[in-house]
Structures are given as structure tokens and as C-alpha cells.
Image (cartoon, rainbow, N blue to C red; front, side, top):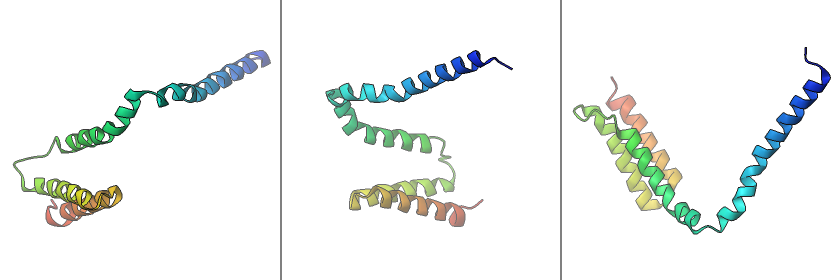
Length: 109
């Protein structure tokens, strides 16, 4: 069993590291708020992230099988709902519901 000085030193070092890691983002936040680059990325990144997610989700689709229609129809509905209503929650829920319905009822294995 470690002696008391070792345990106290370990707790103090752990507390200092934890405090530093939690305070660091707040210290770095002030200069970032004034940055034009961060403002630009804030307006452009949501669309970029969505494109990356779509490509990632659709990259392994078996294009020669009929079950490829389920994700493509769900994606079409999601984009259509979003362009029509501009409501992300409605778009995501609608596309997910269609995909689940198609894969479980129409294109079930």
C-alpha cells in the first residue's frame, strides 16, 4: 500500500491535470470567437458534414441488387422534405421511417 505522501501527490497531480484539461477549451474560446476563419467554417461545415455522412452511409450499397432502392428512396424523401419544410427533425424522421419500413416490409431478406 502506498504511503500517505504518495497518495496525496497522486491526487494533487490528477486534480491539476483535470482542472487544466477542463479550463483549456474556455481559454481557447475567446480568440476563436473573433476569428473570421471559424465564422466561415461555422457556416460551411454543417453542409460538408452532411455530405461526408451521406457518402459514408451509401458507399457500400450493392448497386446490382433491388434492395438498393430502400436507402435511395429514403435519401430522396429526406432531401425532399428538407427542401420543402426546412425542418431537420422532420426530414430525418421521415427518411428514417421510410427506410425502416422499406427494409423491414418490402426488401426483407
